[in-house]
Image (cartoon, rainbow, N blue to C red; front, side, top):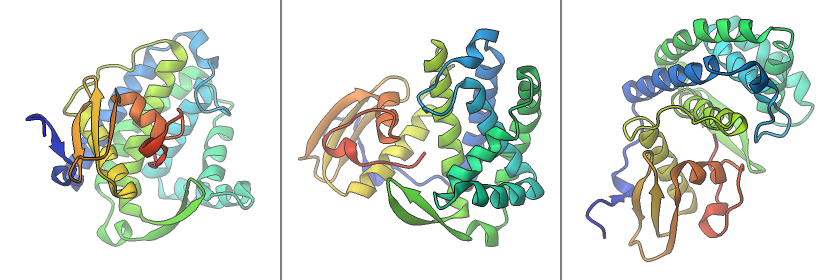
Length: 252
C-alpha cells in the first residue's frame, strides 16, 4: 500500500460541525463563481440537458430558499408533487424551483443568491434532531431508497451545490474557483467512501488534482482506477461514462 494511501475504512463520516463548515464554504464558492459570470454566460448549456446556466442558478437558489423558509419548503413539496406526475418528487421540486424564478433578472438572481446562501448554511446547521431522523423516499438510478433528512441536509445539498459549481464552470469555460484538499478534497473523499460502501468490492483509486488522493478499498487487490478527482465525481453523478466499478452511481 502506498504510504500516502487512505484506506476507505479510515474516511470518517461527516459530523454536523464539519458538514456545516463545508456547506458554508461551498455556498460561498458557488456565489463567487456566479457573481463572476458575464451576460453571455447565463444562456450557456450545462451538462444537465434541461438547464442552461440561468436555470441551474435558479435551481440552486430555489433549494437554498426552501432550506431557509419552512413555508417555501412546504410549497415546493406540494407543487413539486403535482409537477412530478409519478416521477421522483425531487424532479418535480427542481422544475418548480426553476419555473418560479424564470421571470427574475440575472442581477436579481444574484442578489437573492448572495442574501440566501449564508442563511441557508446556518439553517442546515440548526435542523432539530427529530427532523434529522425523518425518513423519505428517493430514487437513485432507478432504485428507491430511504434517506434520513439529515443525510439530505448534511451531505446531498453540499454535493449538489459543489457539482453545479463544476457544471457552470464547464459550461462557461471558467475554472470552478479554488479547489483545495481541505474543502473539495473532503467532499470527494466522502463521495469515495459512499461509492465504496455501495459496491463493496476491493479497489485502488488514484485521483489527481487538488481534490484528489489515493484510496484503497478492501485488500486493494481489485480494480485499479486512475483519473481526475472532479471527473470521477462527474462520472458517478451520471455526467460522464464509466466502466467497471465506475458504473456504480452515487447521489449528488
